[in-house]
Image (cartoon, rainbow, N blue to C red; front, top):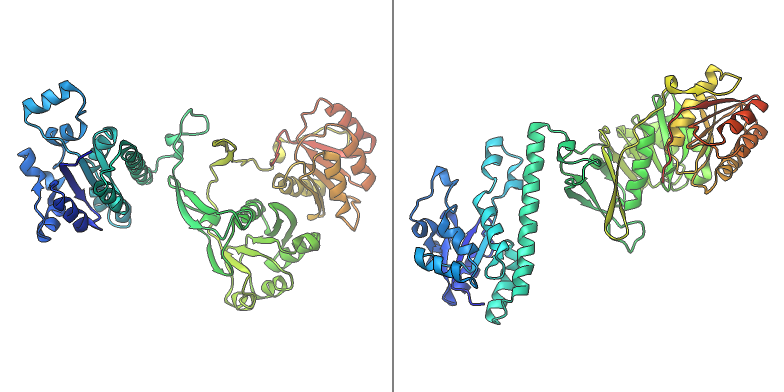
Amino acid sequence: MHIKTALISVSDKTGLVELAKFLAAHHVKMLSTGGTASVLREAGIATVEVSQLTGFAEILGGRVKTLHPRIYAGLLAERDKPEHQQMMQQLGLDYIDLLVVNLYPFKQALSGPLEVAIENIDIGGAAMIRAAAKNYRFVTVVVDPADYNLIVRAIEGDELSEALRLRLATKAFSHTAKYDLTVAAYFAGLSKCLPEELGTVEDEEQILFLKRKTKLRYGENPHQFAALYVDAFRPCSGITEAVQLQGKELSYNNYLDMDAAVGLVDELDEVACVIVKHTNPCGVGLGRSALEAFLEARAVDQVSAFGGIVAFNAPVDAVTAEEIAKTFFEVIVTPGFSKEALERLSQRKNLRLVVRASSGERGQEVRSVEGGGLLVQTSDDRTFERAGCQVKTKRQPTELEWQDMKLAWTICKHAKSNAIVYVRNSKLLGIGAGQTSRIDAARFGAQKVESGLSAAVMASDAFFPFRDSVDEAARQGVTAIIQPGGSIRDQEVIDAADEHNLAMVFTGIRHLRH
C-alpha cells in the first residue's frame, strides 16, 4: 500500500519531527492541526492545516476543527467500492492513507481543576482514530509514538500489509476504549454514581476497568509475574492504599494473606490481633492493648505463627514491637506504628512494615477460571446477629457461651472450608481449616488444643451432614455449638446434641470459603 496523504494531530510530540521528515522525504502530503502544524513549520516541514482543507477555521477555542466531511470521507471511503470512488470524485474529496493521532492527556489532567480535566477530553481525535481503525483495509492508524519506527520500516520495505494495519487498528480501538473508560471512571467520581450503574453481577454485561497500582515481587511462586490492580471506578481503601515503610517488596502471597488478616481483624470489636498463614487464621487475640492481643494470638499456635502475617486493628507501640521481634514474621500490617516501635522493628531489615488505610466497602469479588472466564460474586458481608439465631436444643446457651459463639462464628467465617473453630472465655483455642470432611476438621482443630476443650464452644462454617462431629465435640468437652443448619439430617444432629446436653444454635447463614 502506497501512502500519499497523512493526517497528523498529536498531543505527545515525541518523535513527531523525525517521522514527518521521513514522510516528507517519501513525498507524502501532510495535513495537521494547530499545535502539530506549528511544530512542523518550525522544523521546516511543509504541511497543510486542516482548516485549509475543510475551508472552515477552528472554532470554539479548538473544540471543533477536524469534525468535517472532508476528513471523515477521506478516512472512511472504501477504495474498492465503485460508488465510494464515484462520490469522492464528484465531491472533490481526497483519500487519507495514514492517520497519526494521540489523544489529549486526560489522565495527566486529572490532578488539576475540573475545567482543565473536562477540556482534555478528546472528541475529534477519538472519532478519527475509530474511523481509520474501522477502515483498516485502506487506512493505517498509529496512536503510539513507539510504533513510528514500525511504520518507517514498513514503508521503506514496501511491506505496509493489511495484517500490519489490522494489528495497528486493534491497538487503536484498545487505546480509545481505555481512554473512554478513564473518562467514565472520572465522571463516576464526579457524579458519585454507584458502581452498580456500570454493571453488577446480576447483569449480562458489566464494565471491569482495572488499572495497575504496582508490580509485585512475584506471584504465588518466584517464576510467576504478578501485579496489583485496582478498580478504577472505586476509590482505593484498605490494603490497596497501604504504605510500606520497610522490608522487601510485597509479593502476591503477601497481599492475599494481608487481605485475609485484615478482613478478620476488622470484624472484631475489641482491640485485636490476627495472625494468618496461607490465608487461614492461625492465631486470633483480643485484649485491652495491642500487646495483650498479640500475646493471645501468638499463643494459639506458635508453630504455625512462624513466618505468618500479623494484622492489628490498633496502632503498634514499642512494647508490642519488642514482642513481635521475638518471632519471625513476614509482614506486620496495622493502622500505625509509634516512632519507638519503628526504631525497634527497623533492626529487622527484611520485615515488611505496612500502614493501611481504613477499609471501605468490599464490593464484588472476581476470580479467574481456566479458559479466560471470570467468576464474580458479591462479598460475604454478613456478620453475626444473635437476633437471627435459633436455639434448637433443650438446653439454652449461657451468656458466656453466646459471647464465645459470636467470636468463634466470626473467626470461622474467615477460615477455609471445611472449617471448625473452638473458643473458650473469649480466647481462640484451635482451628481445623481446609479439610475435606467436617469430622476431620473437628478432629484436627481439637488436636491443636493442648489445654483440652472442656467448656469450649464449637463453630462450623456449614451444616453437619452427620452426627459424628457432635459426638466428637461432646467427647472433647465442648458445651455449645453454633452452625448454619440446613442438612437433611438436622434432627439427627439436634438429637445428638440433646443426648450430650449440649446447646446448639442455628444461624441460617453459611460461610463457606474456597
